[in-house]
Length: 308
Image (cartoon, rainbow, N blue to C red; front, side, top):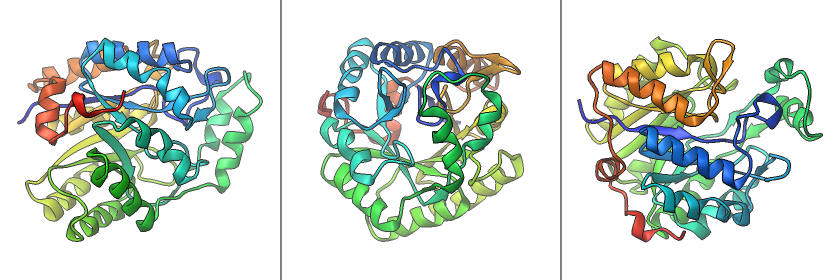
């Protein structure tokens, strides 16, 4: 098996500040969490921005500029900027910071899905900010829009124009078919880095049989030209990551995907989750990839070509 890439998703746009005191919100918290995760073994840092005073998901390039230079100075991990941002953002808002910062890698959702977060309301006893509860409640009427036109636009703006490579986020098996469509159009070149996403209400449940089916489908569609990684939101984070590692894939952890390290026990940092999955995959006989090894495996342009 090739070396295993550990990605860490530092803060995301799903969890709200009331859910955990350890969720990074300010620029210093995001930078510190990212650098800690890199030192623990994460080769790729998947990043979102937040408003530093409220923790609301943000697309403001100024908020991104508050932590990206610090991360670059503090570690050599690959920065993977979201182009998803949040389901309530327009595509132009989602792309504002990536276009300005020109990262080595971007995430790209390969289709539109329902993105329901409202079940998490029951877990919160007190709210820190007025926006949090309505944000979650209104997700029962939210479609996370990424049409073929949107996908083509992101591929052009971030790939053709700025040299970024992509983490193709696939929330359903049809998203693999959509990726194959863009391969056939000549819009995407190998190696493809495919993230199988489980646990979002509106996407795939975190079930081993589904992961096995996705792997067979990807083998049929992409042959030897792809790497796959697995993230599972919520309680299945570590079991599904361990399964992926045993199948020869890569893994993603982080507070974007789960706030916990054990049942009922909040993770106190992203590094804690990276250390946990690193121990698991190394006991499975996998060697953890360095950032430069990940760059070579995925064909990235290198740190010298970014805009921060």
